[in-house]
Length: 108
Image 1 (cartoon, rainbow, N blue to C red):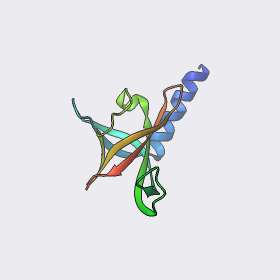
Image 2: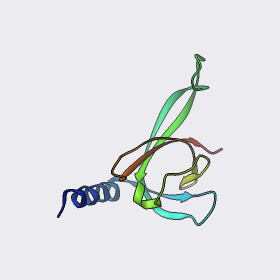
Image 3: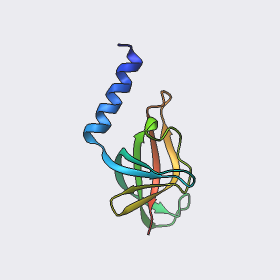
Image 4: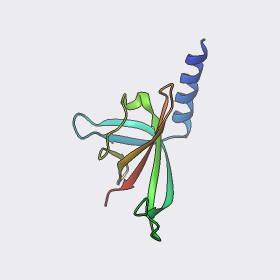
């Protein structure tokens, strides 16, 4: 087994064992069910980039790139149960194309 194959399998095993189920809802096309994600809630300054003291919750979602096959666009959504997280921006994605981390806001 090659090193790349080992890393791919390790990423899949990690997401399968520890991730929570979500549905990816693109602006165009079919929904993708059973996307395993990691979700973190953060408290951030609002509006971003200013020195204001208002705070708001932002959510980081990390998923396997292979689960949706592309980087998500701003405005697309990940749905977990009754909660819908709207993609605000891409934070990071690794060079090997295994993981993608995005910032989301909760859709009211």
